Image (cartoon, rainbow, N blue to C red; front, top):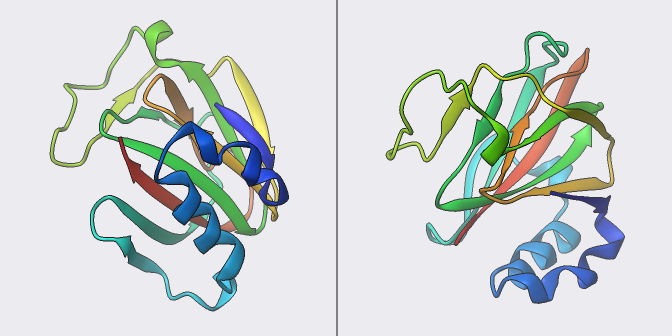
Length: 148
């Protein structure tokens, strides 16, 4: 997991060949003007999902992990509090890995929590289970999906 400000993405671009175009999109696009829903950057290799949600609190947030995609989450409005636990330490899946949706959900509790305020981003790799919407109040955010 990486937690940082959008201004520092140049540090992380070398980690994956698709990070450069994804970070450029995040820096150069008026994200507040994007309609909710899915927006392709590079077909299924890089796409963005703009979503609104209501914080569920720490007790209502559910850990999830992905196998084919890296998540880059960026808050646009409100504060998202996201839980974290290494995927390898998760022991109580809610069911099998869903290949079609590229997700597995866990009943495990996060080990740590981090606020995601506007201008901050979090990068979650397959080894990073994360529980979004752990705070309170409305949140609007962008989730960039990067195909491994």
